[in-house]
Image 1 (cartoon, one colour):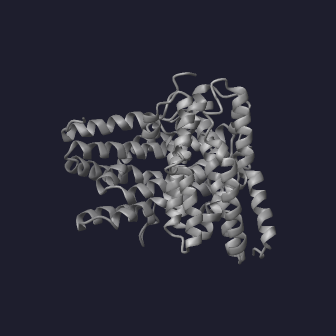
Image 2 (cartoon, chains in turn blue, green):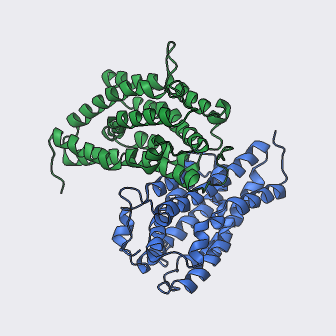
Length: 243
Length: 243
């Protein structure tokens, strides 16, 4: 039997999941910001992560279509704007292409999704399916990895600028706006789940949703590690030209 | 531009995909039948593969619900019987539990799906989603990996009986019926796609579906390899008691 947690106890449990399971703990994240990856390995990371970035607005639109109130839909619509951009601003997907481009990959190749690891496809699609099929509470809770992203983004930006001569501030244009967008998003989502998870079952659902999302992000790095660090590239996937 | 292939040319292309991408070529398959895996590694394989086995009848039922004719539905219903059993016969899922049980795993633990690699969940669910969302032609074509399974099953049975003293014929009860079921299934599916893929686009769809399915099976072994051979078990997944 699970007991009912207070909202603050629920938050503490969510933060404990993040401390243990968020991909900040993954060896590939550490290797990346410590400068230990080759350009080919960074290309593979950026190429595969592009698919995650490109599906985020579809994930958010899937949830937007299910949200019952104007207030919730306005909040969620902003997230889609952050990624798809507006008349005045290019948005996260376009900024991600600055990274792949800065690493020497053609936009056309990146957006074709040819060369993607099948594991990336399966994991990202599982995230979109989760948001489509589970409760709105679980779908909102699955976005709570943003609670932990400012730290990882800070480490990544600082480490990559220092350790890889071919990476510039402009190449990393994706990340800087996320340092303000992510806290705004996660504050809303955290307050929402603290207010709406009112039974032990709902609280378990929220905790499970964050574990699920952490597993997605972890698996994206596991698959890259296996293919491009340990050298087991599956048939059909991107093979770097540079080592 | 893709040109129209004759039915026999299409079959040759399908067999070429199998020769290159079917998981018979995967290092973990070879290590398994050559007796190089520990009992803990075999447990991890059987535990994760259980989820694939358990979802196969749901995958087939998803397709069954979409098939337009009695003839097609009778063919596909037989596959569900093979896995779920009948009043007189236990079926493939129950026989898979003889394997996990023979390897020392409790049925309750196995069927709870606790300890599954997230990568297994994502890959298997991607297969069910493919069969739900793509054309009937692509869905049927994705079953064509059965063309290649008798060889791999033969290697696996022979090698596992010879190399692992704790594995018996009874433990491997799942595999023997598959040696007759799989050719029956794949003959039907092959004839179906040869007859119904009548445009270059449809033929590409069929070839793509087989590549997709090969990528699923390959990824299941890649994830096991990374977690249990190279030793990077993700948070929350099964940890073998024996090495």
